[in-house]
Length: 124
Image 1 (tube, rainbow, N blue to C red):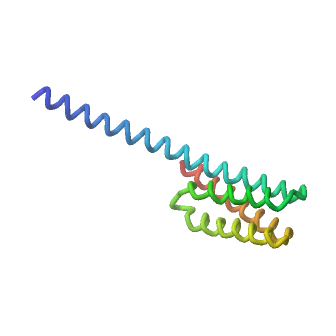
Image 2: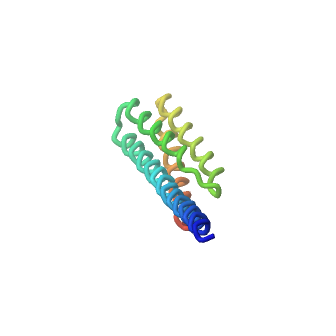
Image 3: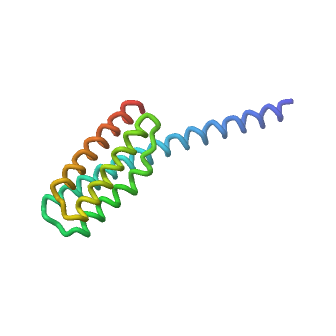
């Protein structure tokens, strides 16, 4: 009976530690995606303000759009979708050389992602 108990205890402990590790690494990835998205949006805003070429700004926006896909948190999911739309609108406006609207959309998206990150950090 003791060997069976030891096996069951070992399996239970292994599952518990694996689950705890997976949650911790998952949280780190979500946080890194949120912070990376914010950094790329800030970079895009800076590039627009400096009058950088269209390709550089669009590349920064596209990188932010890719990173934001990994920022998955149920409470902010709808807001993430709306902010993603703002990034797309910004990219489209900048492609049409409408820097005023592009910058406005970027600033709106930046504010939304910062708010989502604050919400995420408050709950974790």
